[in-house]
Amino acid sequence: MFGWFSRKQQSKDVARDRLKLVLMQDRMALAPHTMEQMKDAVIMAISRFVEIDENGLEFEWKGNERSKALVANIPVRSVRRGKTND
Image (cartoon, helix red, strand yellow):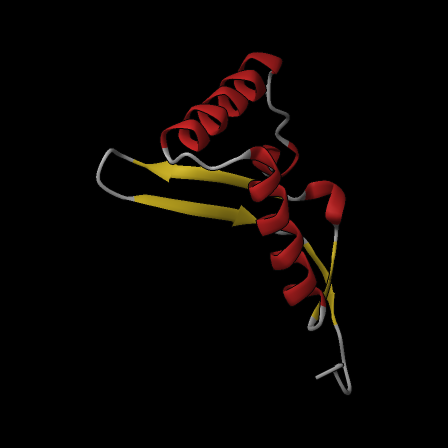
């Protein structure tokens, strides 16, 4: 019934997703290190407010020739309570 919670991706699906990411980065003339810097910046910003599971992070580009979207799946372990480092 709740099998979709523990669904594992097949290696062909993972490879396809990685290839799509590389092709999208290439089309946008986005260097791989720039993508890593973007990920790091997002992680730092969100980590101020919630504790995240960095092993489960997923970033991918979606879109078509006219529009693109960076989609992030960020597993949250818990919400940080109290004062943040502003």
